[in-house]
Length: 196
Image (cartoon, rainbow, N blue to C red; front, side):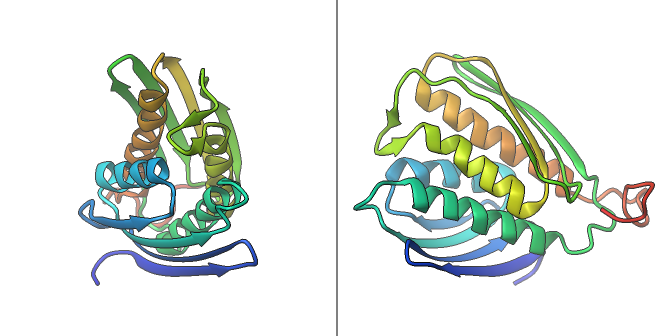
């Protein structure tokens, strides 16, 4: 497969995850996590970031959705980190402001090698479908820490929970697409340290 492609597996007593991920894809995905709304969010992420993802998750959903969502975030972060390689020539920074009807969400990221999450989404319901809204923060936290990236997600406006969540996943996708893209002016890595 062409592009910056990687495969990541993770198996614990709580989850069994297999992921194929391509940063330079076309927005194609085959996703099964056992949580319909989470599938929808990850499909939106791949489609709007032009990433390809094949994902199969078997989690302990008889307990709740926490381990499935968090561990998928860990695996996605690992996949992004591996696919980026030495980061030579990439823009490093990405930002997007995404409207979705009543919702307006911004996402800024830095592929710095340092994890940090700043998160300000406000939901007025505990669940969207069968997914706990509090797990959206856990997902982005896990991605940030396993990928080694700064992620700042902020809600400017929003009333509909589905729209807020989807705007966040799409904004993250667009920001990551920008940050991971190449700029021919960057000959090495975009850092005074010489490494990121």
